Length: 306
Image 1: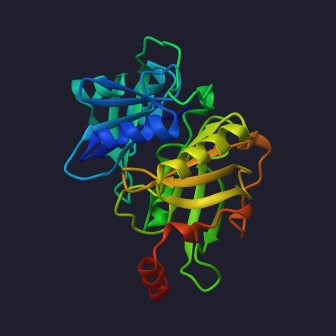
Image 2: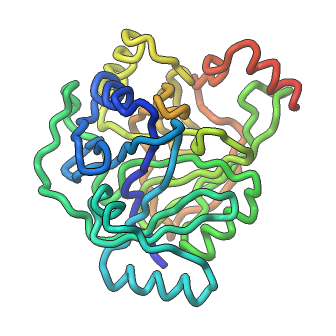
């Protein structure tokens, strides 16, 4: 199986209008009401994030794109041959996601992955309400997501063996410093040059996602979004910084879904035939203070867990 790109994400919301406000006022996405929910546009596609009403706020599904109907049908044959259970998407589910066909399956950590082909769109020009010229999407997909994986080895192996993803690199992360709890993170890529389209976080996450990332073409775009966050009073989850592994310069802000949005610039694009998988020991070359996202009680609880 060859996954072309991260096509979309689906989130659930008790108050969808909060996602619309966050998307348009802070992130610079364009929100469009569609049958079954709200589509958040980042480019000419009909949507890259789809918001549906639900009993809880959180992350629901990750949508992966195959390049053709033939590749999609071959992927279903591969799943069946490996004994992997999958479910065909309903007409309403496919219509919301604007795809020609979709199936979904769960990994060992319980994360829902959707395989689809044939995006359906009028391909109207993207117009950001905040004047963002464009987001870095196209063949690279819309960005990346970081999902919980308490059983990280089994989950990573499933994604490699079943979905055909590759490991870019990995680290053992201690967000609260050397004495804090250790959490392994595996960074994974699909069949495009983006450094990673998915990362696995070794631990439970109530919201179903640690963060999703979108990329803009200039550092000024990041700075303007940072200003919008500060003006809005939204909860900052990490200060501005530059990551060691993918060289993304970014900040993190809390979304209405209970997980963060990483807003970045300058992510690496790699030739996988010439890339060496490695472990890195520092999250960032500079900046990215994640402790700003936690209150005193949360910091004490994490320290106790260590």
